[in-house]
Image (cartoon, rainbow, N blue to C red; front, side, top):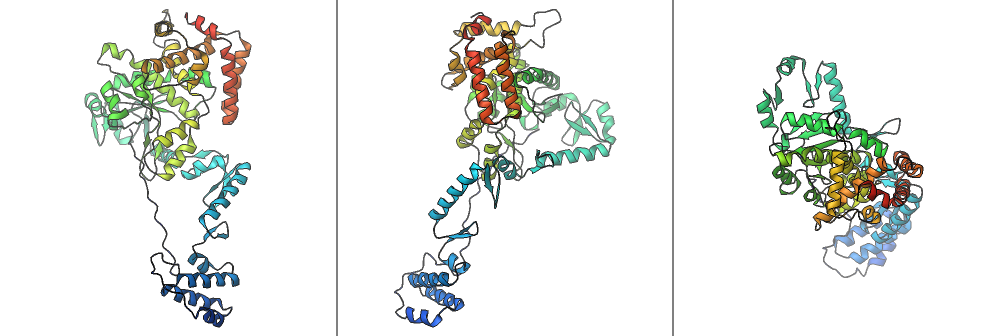
Length: 501
């Protein structure tokens, strides 16, 4: 189950002024005609000069106080009281006379450190890639792998349950205590504090905020449909895994989660009406599935980014219900790709800064991605309707879904220019044209995987892309993606022919 979470904006408050600082509201007073005499009497005694400066401040003689503090700094350049009274800024073991001077220093310093691959975190310079994880409170182990404290706490809890004899039940992603095994054996389900039969469990889990959780071999399926349908949803999600690995060559470290709602009404509710699983761009209206890129879950103390694929499956409607398995496979693919191509910098910065994620977060989130969007959506489309039909009976044609997709593309106008597809200009104001991009990208992926088995150059470019994604930087992946696109562009006519267009 999940808890929707809205990051709370924290307003920074100004630190208290030191007792000898110059108060902005102090009324103006004339200069002291005896100031020079008093300065001469104090001589080089810093303590007496500070007393004189404080007296000037108390009398509202701000200019005199500044002059005295300046005299203090001539004698003691590091005097903290004088610097603070003059509102100087302390940074990097140095005092700066203005914010502008400090900002210039920081810009120059950051530019030099960036060339070394470093960025400032609190009072330290650390590798740039470490900043988002440090900001979120993650820890690094001896193998330089980062670990989420929330996940570590969960793993610790599971270890304790195992030691205590608990057993894992994948059918609702729960751990059953030894003294409750009889409930399990009786096919009862724990809903809150009560053990209930299947009918009541289905009723309990029909609400998005307390949905079923089923652990599959590869995915964690969260759903409000009945358990029988949830079990099928889990099966369909897992059937996408090998094809997705075939496309990208890498796997998520942890099981990705996806959500499957029980109706269009509930789907619209969580996407926008009451955005429990919010998205920024409104693409939920293009399809029966979308990616919830604004979804954070957890408490204010430990918010977690939960961005994932979301779909619906109305099993009560025979016509609409036939689309449910396809859409949830599309959603599973979105969750898979997020697992291999996260945007930790954007997520970490948003968690640290607080506030509800919006346009700035979405822009940074998508800009951080390595995998081009056409390929991300193309992979989702491929496992939705271009791969072998996982439900095809033995001896039946396993390509009926693909043939259907080809026919739909033909009705929509065929294949647009590949450069246009690679640009992937989704526009919520053009629903037919944007939905067509989904199918076209799926066709391109289908051709890449299945349409040119003897093209060694195309295969090599695909392998190079997968290798870059496994170990390369964003720049390396970008170059490999461009090379792959150029190789595909040579087959523009072949791709159309492959689909009978």
